[in-house]
Image 1 (cartoon, rainbow, N blue to C red):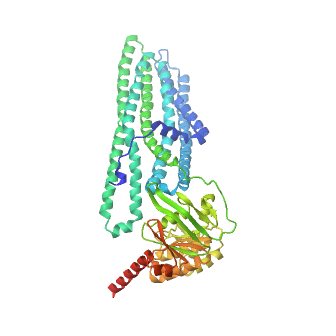
Image 2 (cartoon, rainbow, N blue to C red):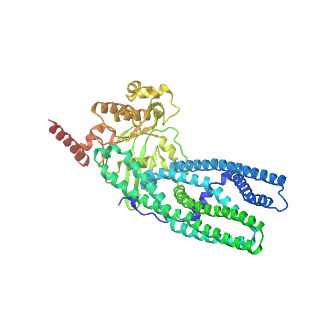
Length: 598
């Protein structure tokens, strides 16, 4: 079963998630305080309104005539009150919208910073689409809830407190009867929240899983099409889509019960007040009490509004709590261990020493076993071996993408453990098989590792990399914007990455053989550029075509994480050992292919 089809667990700590959610307001507490104060004033004015309206009806029913001057003043005051209340509501909404947007911006900034501080091992275990979902869907949901929920929550509590006070001034009997709605509504809210929260958690999880699946399929769309994998991709999508639909349906169904359930409670209370009020009016034989009952009914409707809002607020908080928990979990992930030393090398020569290095991605699966080797300054070191031998892992350790389990790696006698990771990585230029270029101008891509490089230096290095002529044929030349659909071939992209490494001008190099997917002519250009790039630099070349590393100073032959042979091409061929077998098998394959073509 694919990982995205597994069921999600219930929210680990709903209260903690909500606390974390509202903690985000701390930097903006004064703006929020102003907004909530304005909101409460507007609520108070809206509560007082029906009381003025009641006084106006009493004046209209007065036996000794209507006091028009007083009635006019009360009418003007009522209109002014509602206008001011609307203005306060608008200001509160404006402030909260601005604050919630800033909070979303802060969350995304924190997530971005967290990504840069997480060890690579985290991304070995988590899907990229899920991380993107936390930054986009979850943060957007949090922002929306904070914008809508907090003011509604404060308004609801202000009305729940203020309206009964006004109701007591009219009839304490009817007020006590009406307050039965509060415990009944809270019981309804509690029961629905209890049963629906787990589905909100699952909904956010499966949304992240869907984003991961879509990101994975779209990024490899050509491969899917080439292997006729559309049916399988659609089948997998249907699984995660069904999981998302089921959790969303259940969460929304249960949350949708909240408002109708509270409405049922409110309508029962409303009907009871009408009957009880009519009884009181008849028993007291007081005509003016009818106006009081009408005002009281108005307050009953107003009182039902915050109770319904509370249901809506708790429904929104359920979704936000699930989103908050996912963001919180990501931000609470342990960072890459901090650098405690900051040693520098005054003049880097490029001597590399591996001293009894051992490493495993997990303690029970050791990949590199007691690895020892020395590369002299300026040497070209080739690393060869079958798939899974540990070639790429060795480079990852060299760059401190992962920390070694035991042993040491030294550059010019200084342990890389005593240097900052950023400094260690600045000592190496990298040309990988994956030709990573971002959306931007060619100039920006070339200067990515050395933004202070001059245009003259950039052009000279591009000539050395055999890519300057190609760039000058493009519209915009060095200012052409590269995109995924840019008409730039794989070989041309590889030449651009070689030029980028030249411009970076690092004292050492790591090259992942990148000529396996290009034509023969482009391969010659890349080989020439790489020879110029490695000249005078200590270079580590992960070789796939053994014919390309015959001139290497030393060849490290690896198998199952161990060095099985070391030497130059002629020495290793003379031994007729593991390297001889690898080289011969490739040579035989080439002869067989050539024979078939004939």
